[in-house]
Length: 287
Image (cartoon, rainbow, N blue to C red; front, side):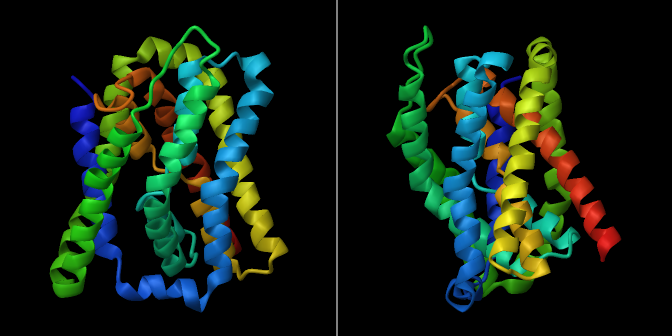
């Protein structure tokens, strides 16, 4: 089974579901409370890829990451948090409105930053015996079709048919996690040997990435004196990336067309959920 036929509808539904939760006033938050929004976007768009690139260089000589895995790790770091981050923010008693605003804004901004960063990454590893080409035009078009279009449809539906949007959202939020579990399961059985062999190196790298970025979110929030709810949301938003989008780009026949590049995203999704569930548990103890 080609994983692309599973991940495409999953990503489209997740983005449509995100659109169903958006309202025009969500974007007003940028003017009303610019500080947490700016901090969150800087963390997601700039700091996260820099931290990932730094970790890759720190571990390169000990974990011996292959060029394909390096591309996969950076791809994860460049994909914005999806609608799942809004759910985790709610569970952690964070600022859900801030979470939704950051998810919407980062999804738009990374349409342009993701191709630029990944083009630089692929060129920077051309010294190896592996040559990876990134068709930037195809990447931009695919992101527009699979992200902007479904988000826009959901957004418009929520404006003109709010009750209908709410009913659809209640259904989609229940099937999102099982769909992602199915995707991970299919990938695991297709690439079982590679995942088992590389789990130690990739698991350590992805865990370090999540801990470093969530820690960065907590530190920035503390230094700039944000509220507890804002801090909890930034920890999640800066640390949580859209694994489904990374898998889609890796597997797409229009872009990388390489499922090995998607393996870091699969391992990231596993470790991310474990760590953030633990974080949610800690916040509930403190509440």
